[in-house]
Length: 135
Image (cartoon, rainbow, N blue to C red; front, top):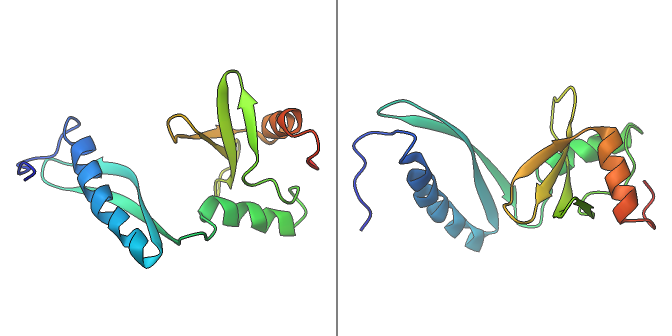
């Protein structure tokens, strides 16, 4: 049985997140993928955004990217392409909604972290790693 929480602090938020995420992961049986966002906390409460997608469906970053493709601002069929930066392997995920600069997002396969890139940098990296892709 997990320990009881008496207050929230920087030290135990990772444990709370892991417990909650493990329960949310059970919804995958129903075809739902639920992920917690950043946490804001006080001593006796915390808040977090939940993002839910249908298993296999587009997440908010892919939806934003596809919206920009429709307007001709981006090249089509780039989501999911992998590229190398230094020794790290990244997967292009899409665009951050409402971002003014460095809106292009890629996921690091080693730690599943999302990293921001400028349009010029992401296109250069994608082209170098995927020479047959139309970038």
